[in-house]
Image (cartoon, rainbow, N blue to C red; front, side, top):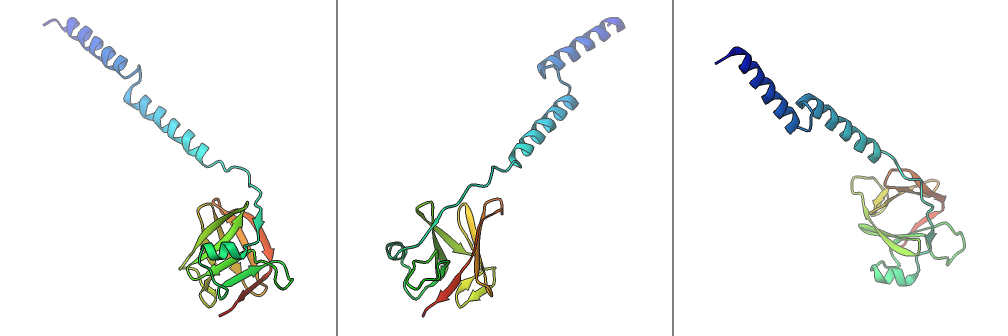
Amino acid sequence: MNNNNTHKGLAVAIALLTTACNGQTPEEKAAADARAVAQVEAIQKIKPPVQPLELGAVNPNVRRLYKLGSSDCAFATDPNPGAFPLLIVGGPKAVLLIDGEPAIFAADNGSPEVAAGVHAKYVGRSYSAQFARQPDRVTIRDRFERIVYQAPGTLSCRG
């Protein structure tokens, strides 16, 4: 076999392999893939603007629907006696009214208790609620851990 023909054959084989890989060497393809992954990761880190949160008072119908009794704890921002609370906590769950719809939160059992059976943190699908005592206040955070609502009030438990 002619040495010149061997070099031509090798050159043709390399050209065919390079063409089969869309004209990219394995190193070029790896670099392009790394750039694409970096672009996707950068886009995923972009946080949407904070959405305004409209909380409503939890009325007795919502309490009945979610089997929350009058002995459960309630957080109220309205100091008037008899006003409906903003949040009801009953055992392992809490209920808020967000944008007119009930939202269920589960107790974060790893958080400390701020009152008998009431944990400091409750987690929902899109939000989390956190209680603090002395002075009493509730903080609602979105899924990006940004504060979307915070208010002083009174956490009262009957039972």
